Length: 321
Figure 1 (cartoon, helix red, strand yellow):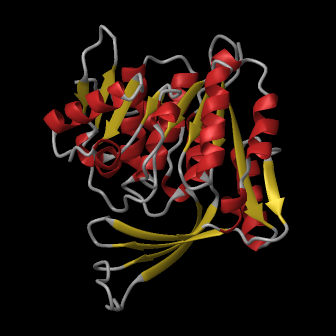
Figure 2 (figure 1 turned 90 degrees about the horizontal axis):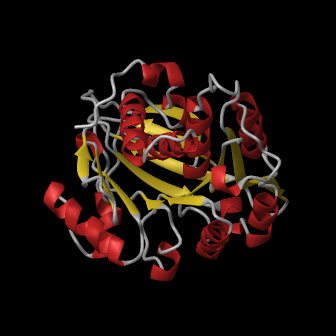
């Protein structure tokens, strides 16, 4: 059986300034370092998955990573397509928009590695259901397919992809970022949802500050129909809860590191989670693997530039408790 990861989402070019602090409203901060990198939550997650896919000793094949997206007919779009080809990502379902420019993100990073981001969506805002339908129609083995989505593309397109994936028996993972309120009927079609603390609070009205409040938020999401909840907690790791499972909820720790830039850490986590699930790992093992991958990414500057390759992640011992 051929495992497949389908990432549906955004592609941006990130323009990053690293400075001593993030500016307050009306403030100008001088003395930063400028970097320009490929990014976008969807593209970051696709690249993370492609770099982390493991060649099976049984079949000699690794999970195939396919990206479904919309880019502009400009230099940023052409550079993105070239990058996806270099990473070994299937890109036949990436459309080039004749009218809208490629997406751009302006990112500030302070000395602690915290970031502030503004995004001009451009062509990402025109990713439509027809494009998603064409991509999903190509999937011949739904049961071995993981679909990974975020919220940087139109919500009706995301909801359509979730419902179609669910109806065809695929496992659908939603990274609900940027945070917004979602239809409970759509949430019930998910295999798993992966909010951070802020996103979990928006979805549940429960402020997540520790393991106890993470448990409360996870239970609330279970009552909304989501069978598996993974709440990412930054340096503390990720809280995992599965409704109706014999495996108790648990906070899985992240390896201790010194953060340089948290940009794309969540994307790295989600791409790693999707590929681990596609490889057949149990959810807790997949989350532990994703925590390891994300811990490496925060030690480096940039979005896709920070994403690790499989040998780096496998070199870190697996920690489940």
